[in-house]
Each structure stands twice: as structure tokens, then as C-alpha cells.
Image (cartoon, rainbow, N blue to C red; front, side, top):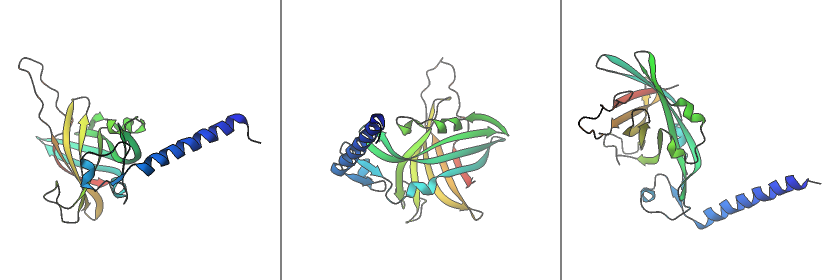
Length: 209
């Protein structure tokens, strides 16, 4: 015979599963490639990675770029998170953290944040489920090419950016084209200068490790 405490845990677990299933049963699913999910949606709807597209972007990527005589090497780690709760909806999500080396020395790293299970996974430096096929938001993409649009935030410099990630081959190795544009920030004359982001914007060709 099961102990009362164990029995209680089983009952609670079953209630949670039933409640979640019932919620999804009554609320709509949206595929992440469905542009309709960018528009208003019903509460408790689920934006789901139906075809596993986010899995294709998962991994560790490294790429370098030279700017003003300095070499910047970026290590980006992307992970898929399922059933993230974002205010009033559930969603599958691609999150990321990164490390930057300048001339061989680490100048910024948020990789430790990969161990943090945020209540809302959008709190990571990078997060997105805006997956598109073709030229939508990517004029240089092919008609059947998969890409993801999102944003990256750097806490130390209080900088934010617009990001485009394309799946590519680099010397016959899988990789990504990581295009980043830092947003302009306002500055009040007389205030201390704003800190610069840890690496310059641009297009980084990053090989999957």
C-alpha cells in the first residue's frame, strides 16, 4: 500500500497534468512559422515548434571579426526551451548566452546564465521564436531558407540589438550567419559617456562546435 504522502503527490501531479491538458484542449495552438502568432492571440494559447525548427539552431557556435585592429571572437550557445510561460501564453523558445574575447582575452561572458531557470526564459540575453521561411524579414535569404529573427541584450553596457540568424555551411561545416545591429541609445549632454557593447555589430560567420 502506498503511503499517504506518496499518494498525495501522485494525485497532485495528475491534477496538474489534467489541468494543463485541459487548458491546451480549449485554447488554440499556433505553429511558430504562422505569422498569425505575431498578432493578438487568445490567453493560454500555445505557440509550438511543431516541426522542430528550433532544434536545428541549437548548439555552440564560434566566430571572429576584426574591427579597428582588434579581433573579437564570439562564442554563442543556443538552447531550445519548451512550454515557456510568457505572461498569458505558452511558447517554445530559442534562448542564448554568449562570451566575447578581445585579442584573446575574455571581456564579457554571460554563459553562466545558461544554468538559471528563469520563470520567463525571455530573460536570457537572446530569446526568440520568430522563425520564418523565405525572404520575409531577410531579403538575402532563399525562397525556402529557414531563419530566425530576434534580439540580444547586454546587461553591462545596457545595450540591445536586432539579430538575424541564418543556417549556413562554412567550409563544408554546419554553422550560422549571425547578423547583429546595435540599437542607438540616447545620451544627455554633460552625462558620462555610455559604455560600449563588448563587441561590434556586423555579420559573424560562426562554425558549429
